[in-house]
Structures are given as structure tokens and as C-alpha cells.
Image 1 (cartoon, rainbow, N blue to C red):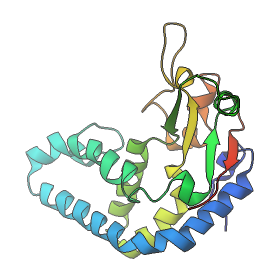
Image 2 (image 1 turned 90 degrees about the vertical axis):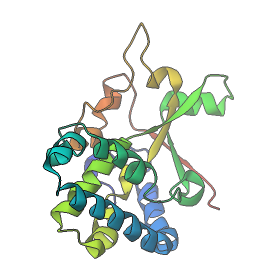
Image 3 (image 1 turned 60 degrees about the horizontal axis):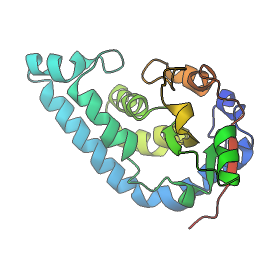
Length: 210
């Protein structure tokens, strides 16, 4: 089964290996945390349905239901509850078996350069969190659909990429990687990376699993 969108797979130096690693994670790690994911989803559902009872509160803090286009407290919280922590930190290079790098970061790492390397959530933790909750809401809060279909199919959205800090951050001379300015479809194409001169394909480094 292919867990990577085709347009994203084209941006990786070894997409088949990454796909195999996601399959391994789902078969060997993910199944054990599904009950905790269901608990998290139930909590988000309860908060959302309770907020609907209070229209003024819902408009101010819950983006009036338009999470994709309007800011709000609940939208920001999804960054943590889902974007960062839905998988309870089980999706890491040491458990999935790979790490992505920009070309410059990989060269710096191999040469043991003193250039500072940072990690970037390719798809953005807010974007992935909002996409997840929107799908949950649209499914009429179907837990089995979310844990058996949606989350496995969107597992790629948890992938991070190591890059030089100078590539990631804005400076006087150049822009940094844009945040919150691209759609999921544009991020799949890595447009937000290409716009700041990051070369593709990203390098896939194989890691020993623990």
C-alpha cells in the first residue's frame, strides 16, 4: 500500500523506503496507541460540541467553525493536541527508521560542520491538526474511520526534515520557510521549500530502529 502522495514521493530521494517505514510503523507501533488516540479525539469532540452551545464563545474562540480560514484558540490548540502530540511522540527517526535532510544539512552533518541544524515539520503542525479535526468533524465523529483510515493515510504529515537554521529562518538577505501561507496541496509539492531555494529531492537517511 502506498502511504505517500505521488507528488510528495517525487520530492524524496528514496520514497519506496520511506513508504516501507510508514508501513512498519503502522504494523508495529501505531496499533498499540490507537486507544489513546481515540481518547484524544473524544476529548476534542466533547469540547467542540460543548462550545457549539455558546454562539458568542464559538465565534470568538472556535473560529466560528471555519478552522481552515480563521484564527482562534481551538485552532491553535490543535497544533499541540494533534499536530505535535496525537501520536504521543512515537513517530520519530529512531522508531520509523529514517530521517529527511535538505542537501545542505546532510552535507553539514556528514562533514561534522558547526553549522546549526534544526528540524522542520514539513506540513506544519497547525495545518495537519486542522486537517485532522476537519476530517473528524466531517465524518460525523467516526472514531473507527479516523483511527483505521484517515490517520494511517495521512501519517506522512508527521514527517519532519532537518535543515540548516540559515535555510529555515528569515534573515536580512533572504526569506525563511513560510508558515501558514501554503495549502496542504502546495506543501505536498514542497513549494514552501523551493521558494526559499531548498533543492529537491530531499535526502532520505536510513536509521536503525529501536
